[in-house]
Amino acid sequence: MSVITTTDTTFFDPFEQLLHDLTERIDAVATAIATESRQLDRHEEFTTSRLAQAINDALHHHPITAPGLALEVHAEEFTKPAEKVAGADLYISLVRKDVEFPRSKGLLVQAKRRSSMLRSDEPRRLGNQCKRMNRRSKTGSYVWVYDAHGIVSAKAPQSSEPILQRLTDASSVGELIADGLRCNKGDDNIGRELSAEPTAGIKAVMRRLSVPQGLDFVVRQD
Image 1 (cartoon, one colour):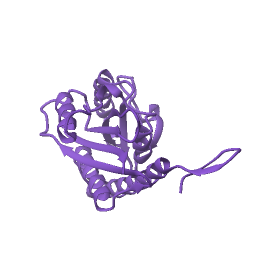
Image 2 (cartoon, rainbow, N blue to C red):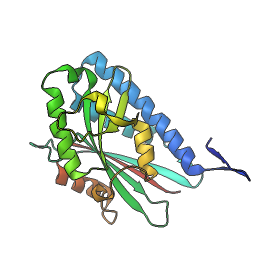
Image 3 (cartoon, rainbow, N blue to C red):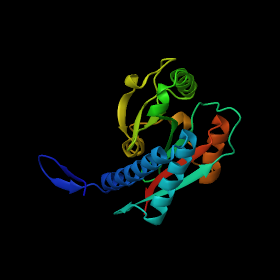
């Protein structure tokens, strides 16, 4: 239970409880998918697709709610583009409809297996992908590093040849998404259009940026 203590009182925060449960659920799924990917030697793009769908399934089968609040999630797949304009494997839409002024932000994610970074050409390739993401969004671009037993999220480096030691602002996948819903992370400029139907809105951004996978999270009043 999320309880905030001040000098005068202690009170329950439904929104923070929802984000706490969301973080734990997403991180449990991410750990399972990362372990499976290592065991089966899956490529990053396929692993990311599996992860997005697994998160979607987990939250649909066992919805997360808190008093007065509900969480909606939707996974979307776009026909694999010939060129990823944004350099990203995954687009994440973060929407708050539980506040007076609804807000929509976005994240771009490029995924890499830590072991693949040992190949001589991979750091340069990641650098080029990060440069393309940062051209689209300097505040909303991230790298997810698949380890043997989990996934580490970090800001996409600005360097043209990033190495994993340069990754900063490290967190888990669940922590990144929760912080995005707090509006502490993400980019308003790549948020989906709130006036459009949700599926059409996320598809429009994915099409514009040529990103093959999408996840949409919405916090609304219940």
